[in-house]
Structure formats: structure tokens, C-alpha cells
Image 1 (cartoon, rainbow, N blue to C red):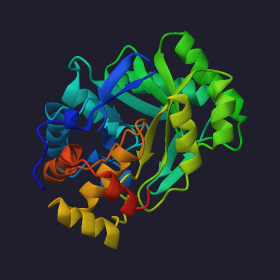
Image 2 (image 1 turned 60 degrees about the vertical axis):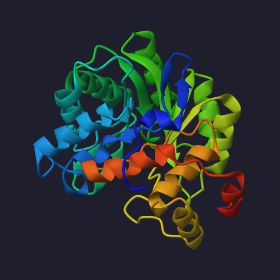
Image 3 (image 1 turned 180 degrees about the vertical axis):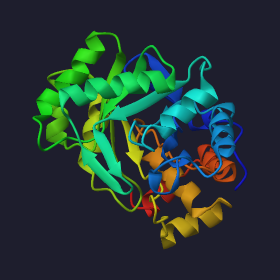
Length: 285
């Protein structure tokens, strides 16, 4: 089943924040940038074509960040997709800066977040960001102070909803006392379930959970159990890894990313794979 599914709608839908209903297989736009998530892509036309293919295939939730490139991913999204088709949700993030290739530094200062939102609005060609996420807590800045800035941006109408990324359950609880939190984006996949408690907390509260590195990031997932199930579905291991995420929780919104149309189509095919309860148990649910 390496061919693409008819549409990302095959994965079903999820409603974020009570008013944003999107198909439950999204797209992470980190890898439309250059090598190492730095600079421009090798072929800008290819990157634009990938983004347009994503929307044509029914994906209406696209996740990015100002630090991807930096700025490059957001610029490409604005160029390729604006004005956006009805129902397309662009989620972006602030809170990480890139002093150089391979260098990711947290910056949760209110002044930085305010500067970042203005840049994102301009690059994405938006008047308001539907989902604005705090990319990573900054140990040098009180967490509540950073989250408070996101709350202010929401009140000011620059942000529709607020999400978090790379947080603990305690940090989620703390943020919820300041502003409604509609999503959490933590690393989570078949092999890395270290955020299981955060996922459970999100499910209990009806908060969307966006697993980053959903198919293993730079080290693609390999597992004998996955291989057995993949063979039964005439699918790839990575397609089964995505299908496993979709079955794991109704609040799960996987966002596999790629800079290749062929690879995107392969990921998309996972939307039409439904694991049986027995297969799910075999995979260690």
C-alpha cells in the first residue's frame, strides 16, 4: 500500500479548541527547508509543489515554526498556499532561535515572543494565527511569564488558540491556569513513548496531541512486530507506525513531514490503514 490514500480525510477528523475541525493526518513543514533545517531547500520549486500537493490531498493542518530555516518554512508556506483554502489551519511556534546550523536555543522572553509573532504573521500572510505554540520552555525565563505572553497575544486577537510543545504534565497544568491550552506537541512514536503521561493527560482533557518525530525522526523506525503487521496490510513499516499512532488515541494528530512528494504520498496512505484490536495489542498498546 505504498500508493497514496484518496484523501487525508480517511484518517477521520479532530476538533481543536472547539472550533477548528481538521483531518487527523497533518503535515509537518520542517523538512521543506535546507539540510539540517537550515537555509533554503535545494529546489524551491519542489518545496512549493510539495506544500501544494499536501493541501490537494486533503491535509488541512500544517505545522511549522519560525525556527525552521529559520523563517524559510513559513515563507514557503505563505508563497505556496496563501490565500489559504477554506478550512486550512496553519499552526506555528515561537520560543526557539537558531544562532547557526545545528544550534537550537530556547528564548522565552516576552519581547522575543512578541517580535516572533509579528514575523510569523508577515511570512505566513495571515492576520491571525489559528494555533500559536510555545516551542520549548526556557530555563532562563519563568514558564508562566512566557505563557502569559501567549495569553496576551490571544486577547489581542493576533492568536486564535494557544498550544505548548516539549512540556511535562506539570507544565501543562500550570499553563492551563493562565490560558486555555488546545494542543501539546511532544516527541512520541512507536519506539519513544516517554511522553505517555502527557498524552494521557491530553486525552483526559480533550486536548489535541501532536507527536513530533512520529515515524522516528532521523532514525526511521524498525521493529519486527511492525514488520509482521506491515506484511499483513501490504504496507511499509512507517505506514504501520503512523496507523498505530492514529489508533493509539482519538486526540492524536500525527504530523509526519517530508520534502518529497513521493514520500508524502507514502505517508498519506497510512490514513486508510485500520489496525485491528488484535494487531494493536500485538504492537504493545
